[in-house]
Amino acid sequence: MAETTTPFLTGWNRLPDELKLQILKETVPRDTYFASSFKKEIPHWRHRHVRGSWRTMLPLLSIPQIKGLALEAFYSQNEMGIMNNELRSYNSEERSVIYYPPRNMRDYITKLYIRSCPSVRTLELLINLGSGSTGMNHLRSVTVVINGSLHWGTRSPERAGFLQILATIDKIEFRARTLMLRYLHDSNILKKKMDDMVTDDLDMLILEKFSLQGRQDKVEEVWTRYKGHGSQEVDAWSTADQSCCGRITSRILSI
Image 1: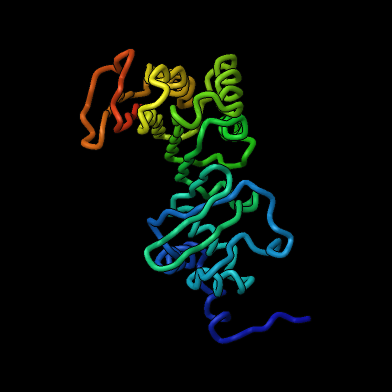
Image 2: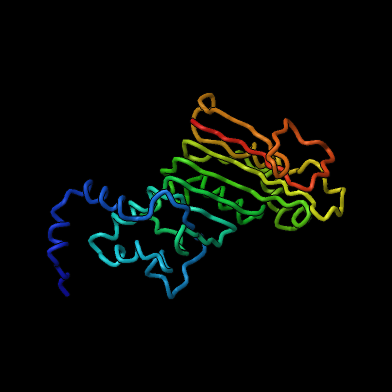
């Protein structure tokens, strides 16, 4: 079956690819947080990695002559997010679900945001990302947020497995310009099991095991610790912190 040709497509095909890409960058959603899933695609949606009421992108993806450049424009200027390996994203107007992009599109991803609880699956994802096996090799910025809840997660098998593997592996180095690590050390809001209210064994381990590829003498570091709802900055955690407001340790690396 011959391709349908319209006056628009005739004119479009005459444009240089650089101009086409610039036009599409002004058309697709930009500077927005979207979510990508590392789960296998649901068979019913196998022909798409975007579904939902995402009206801006779906028409572009339905045109074979435009689809590839539209995906390149989208992935290169939006932040992709992974949350607990099953993700949802929201923009200001409507809900979208975006499946993990095909391998030939992953090099266009430049900004990645990962947020998860400590688990073996999360650690495997981070190891694969650092090794380059995920296919995202042109990242500019990576944000990793690990939510380690004292009250609900300290004794969980997943957390124990995460801690055991992380303690034995070498550093995981990301190929990017900036890496932001945040560890959320939630407090025991219900004031039970006060023996848990001590320095978290994952706190420094998580932050020190991740780095950037390249000459380490060129890497700049900024460490920050916050405590409570008012984000009071502190130099170090006490050995028995009974705050009910939680605390955050942040480490930012840049080249």
